[in-house]
Structures are given as structure tokens and as C-alpha cells.
Length: 225
Length: 328
Image (cartoon, rainbow over all chains, first blue to last red; front, side):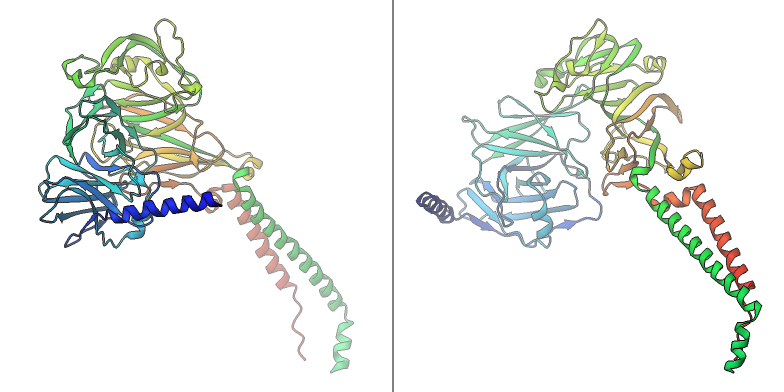
């Protein structure tokens, strides 16, 4: 009985401490999202980069860990079937010192997004405006309650590659895994990656695609935090 | 008035008519029962349990994937080259092999020994070489993934996970049809994102034999048939699930001056259907229902026709024997 009480108290305390470190809220004007009848085949290789969570938050909480030297960013949210796609630009406050932000997400398709599992939505936060994208990316969070410390997931469109291999910095290779099931139009491969202890921002993430024994030129993004 | 009618009821004509009427009611009842029985039987007969439905695919493609359900051997007399993954992909571009590209050549073999549980991706490259890729198995500790001791000149896919064999077009032509069994998927699922491997075309048929056709000793009837959608990925379904026991074969062929693979595949199990997956839309299944089955079934149509004729004849006969209306 008392044990349960203490656990409850503990939970309340941790929740309270989370509330105390209130992340900055960002909003985009205008907010643009698209729902397609037929999926758009996305042309980008990396569709999402987000922290993984075992338990999803009840509400539509989309967050990111944004470095101090960013002025604005572009958030893309894509469902695996490619039927939902949204790209929105958010400005950071003048006195931005870095840290976690939460995006105001006034979506008209709340249920569609909440029904999708964490495997079927890719969120990507890139530096700069949506029209001119650089290589710099930040870690995003899709309905994140508690972030597992250093692991994150890369959502990749393999474009018929046999295999995709990822490297974080000078770390060892990580073989990416294909997602099972049908309706994978926007991306079909996920790479579960991890930052190691000596990783420092910025860290390069390199992707190598292999097909029929041909190793194609690598693509890389620079992860900042 | 009353007197008149009483007198009429005793007439011999009336008695004959009454007995006839009673008989016709009985007959009609029996016939109606028969019709209900026939419809019921047709419905029952079309239930999955009684029906043998086979999906047949005849496809031209440059890609197919198979998860084998039994041990199968492919004999390639002219030999095939094994290519193993390069352990260091980052420096792999320094390596350039004429057959294996950036992978490492690891001997030539004449026999591919495929075991149950092996997943192969088969595709025709743009230079007309056939590549058979050995997809590494997911659960690494199950018995399916254990390495097997190979004989001389023989290669087991599970001994080279992530690798592939290259079979030249001449060697493939000389080898003839190579057999497939298990879970067969034709075409490539991302048909519209580009790439050389896709379903070029072909046709499908869904054949059925139910208790009615069997009782009358007839062959199976074609319930549905048509063209496969080029660029789609086609799967054989059995009892609502991707069939794990399909059978078939493939061989090198030529269509419009380009090399392709001709794949013939038949569903295993009792209730074969076909699922087509076109990129961008929900996958759809071609699975005929009992109406298709009744329409396509000549025995049922013949029975229905005969029964209808009989009923009509009886109707006509009973109206002929009807007595003139009692005019009061």
C-alpha cells in the first residue's frame, strides 16, 4: 500500500520536474499539410530522424532538440504510406540558447496521425527554411514521453537498394532493417542508431546503399544538438 | 343458390378436379423444396470447405522473391559465380570485380541447394545476367539459419547470407526451367520508384472445382481471369494469407527483343486468390465470391435452367386443368 503511494508520488514528482523545464513552443504561420489520395513518392533519401520511445504520449507532441546557432528550421512529417505529408517552417526566438522545443501542430488530421504507430511516421527537423535545405539536421521526437538517452532512428527511402548501411561518426557500421508490410511508399528502411560517449555535435551520419554488389556513393547528414 | 352449389359439388368433374389440385399442390411443394435445396446446396457447395480453387499466374517479369518451403536444387551446368559481401563497405569502392562489382568473388558452383526457409530475391540485371540474392534470415538463432555443410561444387544460400550468385544469360538458357516452391511474389514492390526490376506483364486465372462440377464429372471452370498490371507486385494468396505452398517454375525468355523471366506459379492450399500491390494505392485482392462461382459454373446453370423449365411447365399444366370459375 505504502509502496504504491511512494511510486505514485515519485511519478508525480518526475512529471512535475518535466513541467518545470518547460520547453519553448514554436508555431508556424501559415501551417501547411497535405493529404493525398494516392501516395506521393518522396524524392528524398532521408525521410525522418527521431528519438525512439517505448511509450507514446497521449497527445500529438512533436518536439526537437535544436542547437543554439539555428535561426529557423523546417519540420517535415511524413507517413510511411506517403499519404500524409507536411513541411512547415518555424522561427526560433531571438534569444535562442538551444534546447528542446515543442511544435504547435494545428493539424486537421489529428486522428490519422495519432493512429499511426511510431514505425509509420517519420519526423525530420532540418536547419534553415524548407525551400533551401542544408545537410544539418536535429533530433526530433514523435510523441516522446521520455527520451531514451542516445538512441535514435533514421527513416530511409531505400530506392530499391538491397541493403543500407549507416555510420555514426567514426563508429562501427549499422545494418539498417527493412520494414515489413505493404504500403511503404515514403520510406521502407529504418536504421536504429546510437550516439556514443565521445560523440560531439556536429556528428556526421553516413549512409551507404548497396545493390547487386554495387556500393553506391554515400549520402550524409550532419547531426547537431 | 345453396341448392345449386350443393348439387355442383357432387358432380364427377369436381371430384377429379379436387384430386388433381391436391396433387399439383403436393408437386409444387416438392419442386419448391427442390429449388430451395438446390440454392442451398449451391451456397453450401461454394463454401471454402467444399471448393478447390487454384490461382494460376503466367507472368513476364525481371524480378521475383521466393521464400522456399521445401528443399530445391537448381542445376546450372555452365556454372554460377558466388559474390560475398565486402566486410569493409567504406573502402569497397576501391574494389572493382567484373562480375561481383564491389563484392568479393568466392568461386564458381554448379548446384544451388536451396533449403526450406531460405529467402531468395531473383532478378534479371540490365546486362541480362541473373542475380539470385540470399536474403539473410531474421532470427539468427533458429535452426533455419544454421549453416549446412556443402558438397563439392554446391552452394547453400544460408552459407552466404547477404551474398548472391550471378548466372549468365547463356547459363540460364542452358539450365531450362528452375523450380520454385513456397511463398512466391512476382515483380517488385516499389515498381514505380524506378529501377530495372519490375513486372512487365502477364495474365492470371482463378480456376475452381466444387462438388457440383465434381459430381457431374466436369473439368474445373475459370472463375476469373485477366491481365496483370505491369509494374505491380503480385502475390498468390491462399485462405486469405500469402500462400506458403505455391509451386511453379521460371525460365529465361524474350519479349519484344528484351530478355525477361517467364514465371508460372500455382497456388497451394484450397482457396487460391491473387493480390496485386501497385505503389501508391491500397493493395487489392482478386478473390471471386459465390456469385462469380455460380455464374461461371455450367452445371449449376444447366440445373437452374432445367428446374425453371420444369416449374414453368407445371404452372402451365395446372392452369390448364383449372376448373371454370364458380359463377354464383
